[in-house]
Image (cartoon, rainbow, N blue to C red; front, top):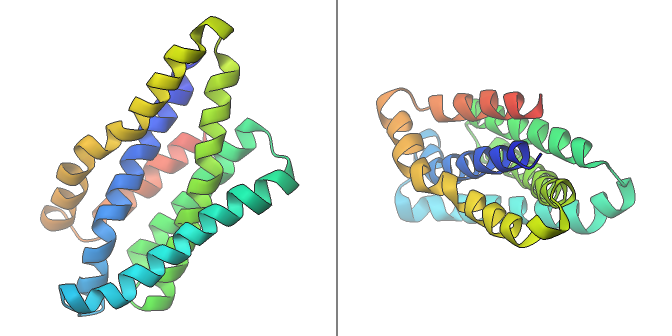
Length: 173
């Protein structure tokens, strides 16, 4: 059954979009910086997150030899932690930690659903599944700017992060 993996991929894409697009605004609002000044915090924190993704994929996963299910669950739980730290973050250290957890979560989740959907598909479905997984990776980014940023401005500045935390916990189940 490939549908659960595709659904996970769409959820992950939505969460990635919401967290990535609201992160700079949270830094500006909570650390009282302007757009240009916030780059000195946003850039390094996001770089730490990217490095965490690489460490997860190049170092941790090969050594841990986790199952597909474990990759999906651990990745989702790390993303939930990242989302919750975004609710509480008020200084660079917590924002950076949230990005590191975000990177680790991405690093575990993305290989998990990519391998899972490939293993669930028949040999004849492999080409179709490759296209579907690529489409699913981008699908969440279609609505995340409208959804996440709208929530940030109109519901509360914590609401997109709470939504993401709840969604990834549901995805882990």
